[in-house]
Length: 373
Image 1 (cartoon, rainbow, N blue to C red):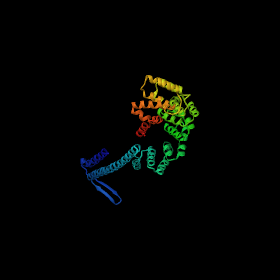
Image 2 (image 1 turned 30 degrees about the vertical axis):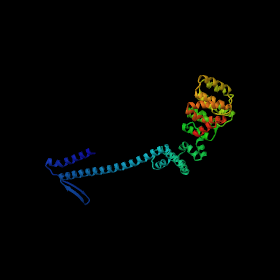
Image 3 (image 1 turned 90 degrees about the horizontal axis):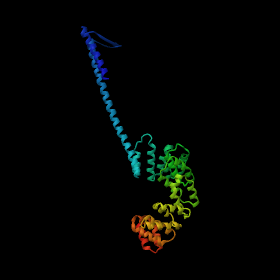
Image 4 (image 1 turned 135 degrees about the vertical axis):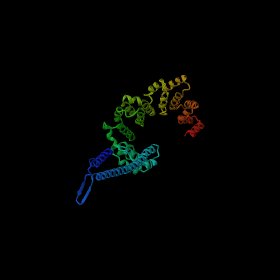
C-alpha cells in the first residue's frame, strides 16, 4: 500500500515540476456546475500532494484505531472464553473427585467446544443427581441427543428410568457398528436386571470384539453364576466357550460347593492341590460350611507334612474340617494360623469365631468379634 502512495506522489511531483523545466507555468481549470478550481500546474501539484499526504495520514490513523479496537475486543473475548473453558475443566475434575456441588456450579458457568456438549451435560446431570436434584438431572439427560443418552444409560437407571435405559441400549446387540462402550454398558444393564438369557446371548459378541478384559469378565461371571441351583450352574457353565470356561472354572467350582455339591468337583479340587494352587483352593473352600471332601482332606494333611506351616494350606484344612462339623480340628488350625499373621486373622476371623463358640472358647470368640466387627 505504501509503495502505491509513493508512486502517486512521484507522479504528482513530476507533473508539478515539468512546467518549470520547460519554462511554462501552465494552467489548470476544473469546473463542475457552480464549483470551479483553477490555478497553475505547480500550485495544483502542491495541492494534490498535500491532499494525498492528508489522505494517507487519515488512512493510517483510522487503521491504527481499528486495530486497537479489534485487539482490545479479541483480548476481552479470549479472556472470557478461557475462563469458561477453565470452568469446564475444573468442573470435570471436581466431578471426578466427588465434589458434585462445586462441579454443578462450575459447569453452569462453562462453555463447551463442539462435540463436548453431551459429556458436559451428563456430568452436570450426575452432579445434580448426587445432590438429590433428580428433576434437574432428568431434564439435563432428556436434552442429550440419542447417542449421548446411550452413554448416560446408567444415570437413567439411577433415576429409576430403567425402561428408558433398556430402550436406548436394546438395539446395541443387533447393531454391528455399536461401540465397545455401548456393549459394555448393555451387559451391565442386563446384569442389574438379572436378564441372564440375554446376557449369555451377548457373550459371543463381547468375546469377538474383546470388549472386556479378564478382570471384567470375572466380575460378569461371578454375577452370572450367583444364586442358582446346581442344575442351572452346570447348564450355564457347559454353554460357555472354551475361553470363558477357563476363566469361569474357579467361579463354577465355588458356586457348586456353595450349594453343597462336592461329589462331581472333588477331583478338580485335588488337581488344584497337587499343582500347589493353594490360594485358589482356599478361596473355593470358603464358599460353604456344608460339604464332604474326605479324599481332599487326607491329601491336604499329607501335603502339610511337607509344608507344615504353609498358611493357605492350613486354612484349607480348617475349612474342610469346619464343613465336616469337626470344630475341634478347625479351631486348632485357625489358632495356629492366627499366631502366624495378623493378616489371616483379619480375613478369616468370622469363620474361626463359629468354631470357637462350638468349642466353648467364648472369650476368644468375643475378643475377635470386638476387635474386627
